[in-house]
Length: 352
Image 1 (cartoon, rainbow, N blue to C red):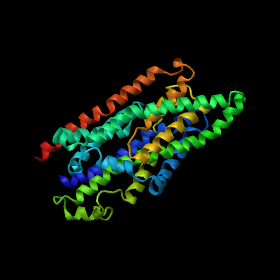
Image 2: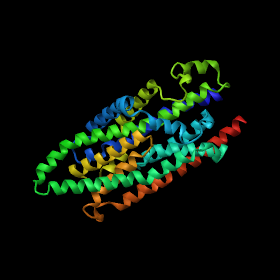
Image 3: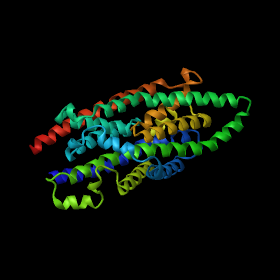
Image 4: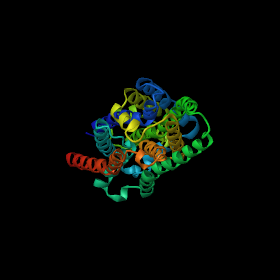
């Protein structure tokens, strides 16, 4: 049972990483599609490439601090066993799959965090959780869209001020070209934060397996080929590379329903607005990745889109769509938390 749960956890972790790419494909390319700078197929290929480039940014410049937070900053490592991780992944994957199917852009990272909290809390109690990491994550549910909103609003005000005497068509042509840069930057920012979340979970699973005497020596030898337990908890380069490849494949397949919601469901997007919202999102994502804070790319880009939309008046924002997205955000931690918690309780009943 233990070996089976271990193998299943690793498989589901990569499936979750794939779903992450599918859902967050919209976050990366919705604006550049809505402004018709690229076709949907061109945008998907473009995004997948730059998401993979994020691996090199993390490897050589900003590190894998977000993965460390996911693996050891939400719950005590002593409790992060294969049953906890399996329960957390299944609960989160169910919620992400439902929201992707219904076209609702949510935070896959917060779904996974909710899954971890529920799986640990329902069986081991609050003593097994790390309050600081949870509070930090919860605070950025509010802060990340707020930062995206304020930054994009102020940046668009600045652009309009310095370009007020420029010809409209010339400005549009210029920002259509600049959107290629802003989309690339946002994809790199997304990859630098989101891909690390699943790899942190897999890494802590490998670490726990190699420190668990109940796991067969054969399984431990296989894991040891990829993970050097003598280094303590860390992120192996091979694991990081595989996670980036899997997430890029998810983006390549795409999430067409979510693309529609963010691409035109919140506000009418022009090239200058698309560039501004993406730059604000990319800046926020890269800075939080450096700080090791797992944030939602969905929250960030949605805040940015509302920020550039509201500058022309509150009626320019489709608040019905915004309310649906906010409702999904509110549910994204509690729903996976309950699902994962119940799954872990059931698994403990089976193995007791």
